[in-house]
Image (cartoon, rainbow, N blue to C red):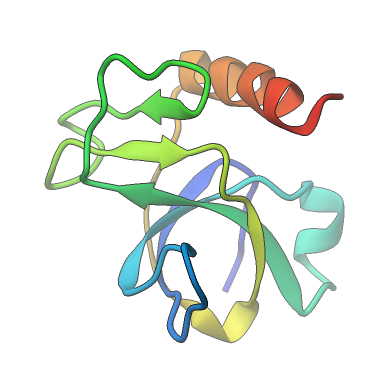
Length: 111
């Protein structure tokens, strides 16, 4: 499988611990493409259908056309997952969403 930064993939995030996002759900790849061909794990942000339109820094809002349900990228929950967890590619972020995700990650990670 070919993973690309800012692609949306369906992934199995179980098992989880505590407040981690679980289940089989979409994720967005935030890891650089420099690692995606050789690295055995990939850094992602989970995506939720628990929409919070008023939350701007911790979320990136997806459009209706990107996934079957309105969804938000959980910017405050990045994690590395084994590449075996990926199931199928579902789409990608728009250029505007990429810019917002990068800005929000900088805030969340204090970069």
